[in-house]
Image 1 (cartoon, rainbow, N blue to C red):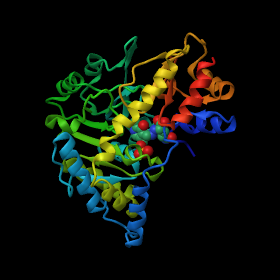
Image 2: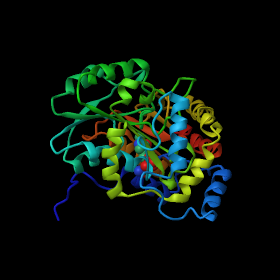
Image 3: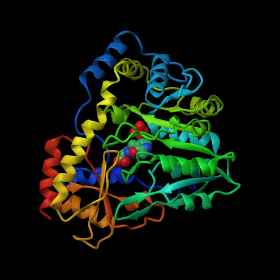
Image 4: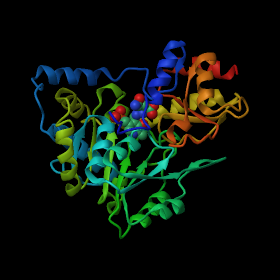
Length: 380
Ligand code: PMP
Ligand code: GLN
């Protein structure tokens, strides 16, 4: 069999989690919480099962969940999506991203991807027969930023889609109003669509609002906006997410979705819909994670690592040039096996494995886990 994905192996997250388990390391590599979700959410799911919500829901997602998602977006970002024709529930954000790419990218179409990039974008583009056009973020003393002039120069008559991600994995940067304005200038008057990965929408710190593309009517009209309950409700293993997009885009999305998964497990959808009736859990999330971010940053302040800004997500990137000149993969492996704290090399998020001397830690962990990791990281 000739592979359709020659560049793909086992993901860096799986590899680093296995290495961490093998060496008894504190796992700050793969992004997932080491604490449980609210028991009230589990009760709502089990109530839904007992109430008989155990057969296929609608192909588009259980109606109460689509309505709750539309209401949330309207109240937070002021955009009124129609729950019937513009919201689709997906098997996590990963399926939403892949399905969105498959439904709009034709063979030979160009897709602009900003690197470092989350690892699922490029394989999905490859399966669609698309051509990735890579634009690297700039990284300096003040952290990472998108070079919009370079992105504008990467646009051609073949550009079909631009993928953005805010808050951004792995860098923890967030797009600001000036970034959104630059993006709007680039696509205005073109047929280019946007895929906006907003899975960390509720993890934005220091009182800054999340720059959802749904806040901007001009951009929302050409965008697939993706989010995930795995991140928001500390249930990465449930794999429930969604895509919000104008009706014409949603219609194309659903053509692929219905033969990709058809639909997503019913009881989780009803449980989450019930839980969303109270906005407090997601409204509390920025403060919850900002405290963990600060605990982790304060702990690293006296170490030999240099902290990069962490404005959003549950990731903290650090430079390690005062400690080692090894490649990021070598350094992450050494940290895991010798210091017993796992991290992710940022080079894994670049097609050509660009080296910046930076690794990523995940701080979605119990305070005691973070303290144990900090003790080890400060010992270097
Ligand atoms: N996009 C980004 C940027 C992510 O970090 C993740 C989580 N790993 C996903 C998408 C996938 O989300 P899910 O687990 O809901 O499929
Ligand atoms: N999104 C998670 C991360 O960036 C991992 C998801 C996965 O393991 N595929 O760490």
